Amino acid sequence: MSKTLSGSGDDSTLPAIGLGTYRLRGRRGADAVVSAVRTGYRLIDSAFSYENEGSVSDGVARAIAEGLASRAELIVTSKVPGRHFGYEQTLAAVEESAARMRSIGAIDLYLIHWPNPEQNKYVDTWRALIEARERALVRHIGVSNFLPEHIDRIEAATGVLPAVNQIESHPRFPNTEQIAYDAERGITTEAWSPIGRGSDLLADPLIGEVAAAHGVTAAQAVLAWHMARGVVPIPKSSSAGRQAENLAAAAIILDPAEVETISSLGRPDGRLAGQDPAVYEEM
Ligand SMILES: NC(=O)c1ccc[n+]([C@@H]2O[C@H](COP(=O)([O-])OP(=O)(O)OC[C@H]3O[C@@H](n4cnc5c(N)ncnc54)[C@H](OP(=O)(O)O)[C@@H]3O)[C@@H](O)[C@H]2O)c1
Image 1: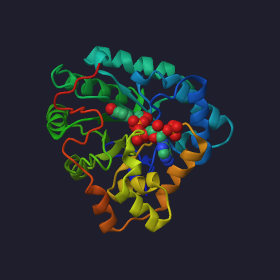
Image 2 (image 1 turned 60 degrees about the horizontal axis):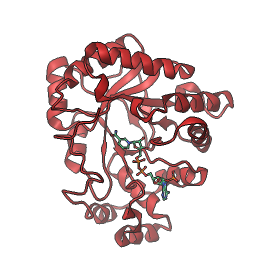
Image 3 (image 1 turned 120 degrees about the vertical axis):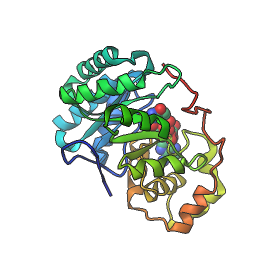
Image 4 (image 1 turned 180 degrees about the vertical axis):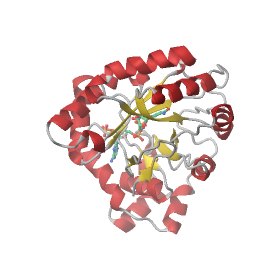
């Protein structure tokens, strides 16, 4: 399953699953990206704040040079952090990202990392991303951690909806209402920390039961749960074996009762680090 990116004027699609890269930096980060593309990943996450735009794009460029994928098949993402919000500041930040990622040409997908409502600059930041897309610095634009009120506001101000909203979602915090809101507007939802970022989530007995019924691992069952909900998970792994394990989850189909079983682990306070975008600010 793949997802067409809305509002783009071209026919780009997102694959069913992508690679997270938080904490993958330097030579090791680039090697992990090459390994991921070799395994079959075509969507690679990154961010200005992860300090890995250079190693991610170098890994992608190496993978292309090795014939592991064509440039056109790959979607490389980055994000602008709060410390660079504001119209001129964001355009300069996108230019910095583009310079660090010059080995791959235009950035495929560029997101606003957090809305930072108290800072109250995300509308001008969105205007800058629209301009960056017009200048062909980036091909698609979107947001991350945006609530309905934030998306409504940028749409009212500019008439332009994001192609993607990348949000926290995992069985302990399914974020179902935000996913429904995005879907109604043709916005693709990506899930960050999709397998719970090394917490004890994967040891949960209910997830274990669903996994056992399919003869798959807990991580694969959780990733299949995301895909059954129409969400693109972006699990991070530095290991070639776990990258392959995670990508193979795209072939697993859960039935509605299994999806419900995993969703039943959700709790209103289930966010991994309490980062509620209504109040959390990240620079
Ligand atoms: N937009 C945002 O605000 C935001 C916030 C957080 C994250 N993100 C993005 O989302 C990506 C994913 O989130 P995340 O890194 O926080 O968490 P995650 O992908 O849920 O979990 C990553 C952790 O799980 C381990 N792992 C990977 N595959 C596994 C498997 N099959 N079985 C067991 N353990 C496995 C990884 O270890 P190994 O590497 O050793 O395999 C790593 O410790 C990030 O890397 C980043 O790109 C975005």
